[in-house]
Structures are given as structure tokens and as C-alpha cells.
Image 1 (cartoon, rainbow, N blue to C red):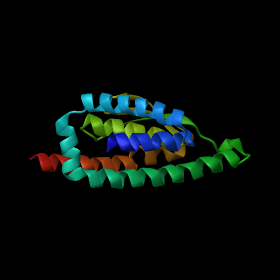
Image 2: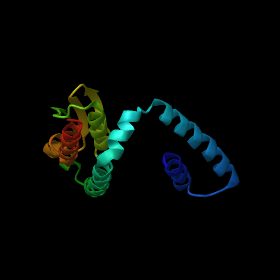
Image 3: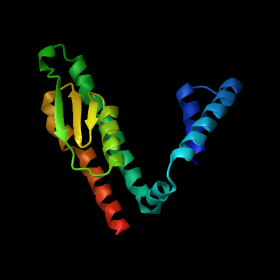
Image 4: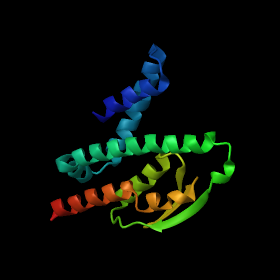
Length: 160
């Protein structure tokens, strides 16, 4: 299934279908699939597939919606001729997430959202660059951290 998703994304990102792209995509996606399967632990795959796949699908939808909202906010900043409304800064916060996978997912989600980028992650401490420092609370205690904390709690409950 993962191979098929990667192969379809290959064509989606390339924007066209040719025999050369199909062959190159087959080779690259095959190598990526082999690499990921070799290093993914079986227990993690089973853990996610047992009952948390739906949680991650819901999380993906939340991420998608937040990316759209952030795009609109960044467009408003850019299209506004008054640059004094910009308040870029670095913020540092500590996450409640215990699981390293969840912390990495949080860092990546922040980076995927326009206007923010995670520039550092040491254990539970994150350093994030934001275009508008007035959005600090949304980064620190935002919906990403809340949803991932809920998923982490459910995972811990299932392991007991």
C-alpha cells in the first residue's frame, strides 16, 4: 500500500505521465519502499494499524485545514503594504509529548504550516520561527499539540 501511495504521489508531483517518469518513479519508489520497510519496526506498524490509523487520518485532516488557514493568514500579511504589521520572531516552548515520534510529528506539522518553521528540537524543547509573534500561543498550545497529546494518551492506554 505504501509503495502505491508513493508511486501515485510521484506522478502527482511531476504533473505528467511519461514512460521515462514511470520507470524512474518505479525505481525511486521501490528503493524508498525497501528502505522504509527495512527500518520500520514491526511493533510500530502494528500499533498504528491496530486502532490509531483513524486518529492519524483525523490528524491529517486537521493538518490540512490548518495549512489552508495559515496560507490565508500569510497571504494577508504579504499583500498588506504596511510591513509594520509583521512581527517575526523566534519562540521557544516545551512540549508535554513524551513519545519522540509524536514530538517529531509536531515539529514537522509546525514546519509544514506556512509562516512557521521549526528550527530546533532538543528533547521536549522546540524553537520555532514565526512570521507573526502574536500567533505564539497557537504554536505553543495549538491544535497540533493537543491532537498529538490525545493520540499519545490513547496509545498509552492501549498498551496497558
